Length: 115
Image (cartoon, rainbow, N blue to C red; front, side, top):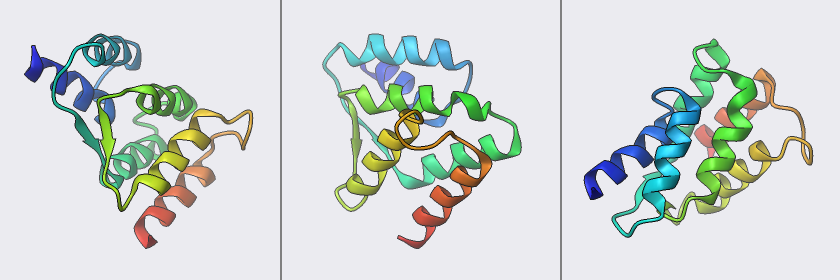
Protein backbone atom coordinates (compact mmCIF):
# COMPACT_ATOMS: atom_id res chain seq x y z
CA UNK A 1 0.00 0.00 0.00
CA UNK A 2 2.82 2.42 0.79
CA UNK A 3 4.32 2.33 -2.69
CA UNK A 4 0.82 2.75 -4.13
CA UNK A 5 0.32 5.73 -1.83
CA UNK A 6 3.52 7.35 -2.97
CA UNK A 7 2.56 6.69 -6.57
CA UNK A 8 -0.88 8.27 -6.12
CA UNK A 9 0.65 11.36 -4.53
CA UNK A 10 3.39 11.58 -7.14
CA UNK A 11 0.87 11.13 -9.95
CA UNK A 12 -1.16 14.05 -8.61
CA UNK A 13 1.92 16.25 -8.28
CA UNK A 14 2.79 15.46 -11.90
CA UNK A 15 -0.88 15.62 -13.00
CA UNK A 16 -0.50 12.41 -14.97
CA UNK A 17 -4.16 11.70 -15.79
CA UNK A 18 -7.72 12.77 -14.99
CA UNK A 19 -7.58 15.27 -12.14
CA UNK A 20 -10.68 13.91 -10.37
CA UNK A 21 -9.26 10.40 -10.19
CA UNK A 22 -5.84 11.65 -9.11
CA UNK A 23 -7.30 13.77 -6.31
CA UNK A 24 -9.49 10.92 -5.05
CA UNK A 25 -6.57 8.46 -5.02
CA UNK A 26 -4.22 10.95 -3.36
CA UNK A 27 -6.78 11.82 -0.68
CA UNK A 28 -7.32 8.12 0.11
CA UNK A 29 -3.58 7.54 0.36
CA UNK A 30 -2.99 10.66 2.42
CA UNK A 31 -5.19 9.25 5.20
CA UNK A 32 -2.74 6.39 5.81
CA UNK A 33 0.71 6.56 7.33
CA UNK A 34 3.57 6.23 4.94
CA UNK A 35 6.40 8.09 3.29
CA UNK A 36 5.94 11.63 2.09
CA UNK A 37 6.60 12.80 -1.42
CA UNK A 38 8.29 16.02 -2.45
CA UNK A 39 6.80 18.85 -4.40
CA UNK A 40 9.59 20.76 -6.08
CA UNK A 41 9.72 23.69 -8.42
CA UNK A 42 10.60 21.47 -11.41
CA UNK A 43 7.32 19.56 -11.03
CA UNK A 44 5.36 22.80 -10.67
CA UNK A 45 7.06 24.38 -13.71
CA UNK A 46 6.28 21.28 -15.76
CA UNK A 47 2.58 21.45 -14.86
CA UNK A 48 2.52 25.18 -15.61
CA UNK A 49 4.20 24.67 -18.99
CA UNK A 50 1.76 21.88 -19.87
CA UNK A 51 -1.10 24.20 -18.88
CA UNK A 52 0.23 27.00 -21.07
CA UNK A 53 0.60 24.61 -24.03
CA UNK A 54 -3.00 23.42 -23.63
CA UNK A 55 -2.07 19.86 -22.72
CA UNK A 56 -3.68 20.48 -19.31
CA UNK A 57 -6.78 22.57 -18.62
CA UNK A 58 -5.49 25.85 -17.23
CA UNK A 59 -8.85 26.47 -15.57
CA UNK A 60 -8.31 23.36 -13.42
CA UNK A 61 -5.02 24.64 -12.00
CA UNK A 62 -6.74 26.07 -8.90
CA UNK A 63 -8.24 22.67 -8.10
CA UNK A 64 -4.89 20.93 -8.65
CA UNK A 65 -3.02 23.41 -6.45
CA UNK A 66 -5.69 23.27 -3.74
CA UNK A 67 -5.62 19.48 -3.67
CA UNK A 68 -1.85 19.41 -3.25
CA UNK A 69 -1.90 22.22 -0.69
CA UNK A 70 -4.06 20.25 1.76
CA UNK A 71 -2.22 16.92 1.57
CA UNK A 72 -0.25 16.09 4.71
CA UNK A 73 2.16 13.74 2.97
CA UNK A 74 3.38 16.28 0.42
CA UNK A 75 6.54 18.03 1.58
CA UNK A 76 8.49 20.94 0.15
CA UNK A 77 12.23 21.44 0.56
CA UNK A 78 13.04 24.17 3.04
CA UNK A 79 14.71 26.31 0.39
CA UNK A 80 11.48 26.36 -1.67
CA UNK A 81 8.83 26.15 1.03
CA UNK A 82 7.98 29.86 1.12
CA UNK A 83 7.71 30.28 -2.66
CA UNK A 84 5.86 27.04 -3.39
CA UNK A 85 3.47 27.46 -0.46
CA UNK A 86 2.67 30.95 -1.71
CA UNK A 87 2.21 29.56 -5.22
CA UNK A 88 -0.19 26.86 -4.02
CA UNK A 89 -2.19 29.34 -1.94
CA UNK A 90 -2.46 32.01 -4.64
CA UNK A 91 -3.22 29.64 -7.50
CA UNK A 92 -5.78 27.70 -5.46
CA UNK A 93 -7.52 30.97 -4.50
CA UNK A 94 -7.99 32.94 -7.74
CA UNK A 95 -11.01 34.67 -6.18
CA UNK A 96 -8.62 36.27 -3.65
CA UNK A 97 -5.73 37.00 -6.00
CA UNK A 98 -6.26 36.91 -9.75
CA UNK A 99 -7.80 34.59 -12.32
CA UNK A 100 -5.45 31.94 -13.64
CA UNK A 101 -4.23 32.89 -17.10
CA UNK A 102 -1.27 32.11 -19.33
CA UNK A 103 0.37 35.33 -18.08
CA UNK A 104 0.00 34.25 -14.45
CA UNK A 105 1.54 30.87 -15.29
CA UNK A 106 4.43 32.49 -17.16
CA UNK A 107 5.12 34.85 -14.23
CA UNK A 108 5.28 31.93 -11.81
CA UNK A 109 7.59 29.99 -14.12
CA UNK A 110 9.89 33.00 -14.37
CA UNK A 111 9.83 33.50 -10.63
CA UNK A 112 10.76 29.87 -10.01
CA UNK A 113 13.56 29.98 -12.56
CA UNK A 114 15.09 33.12 -11.04
CA UNK A 115 14.64 32.37 -7.34
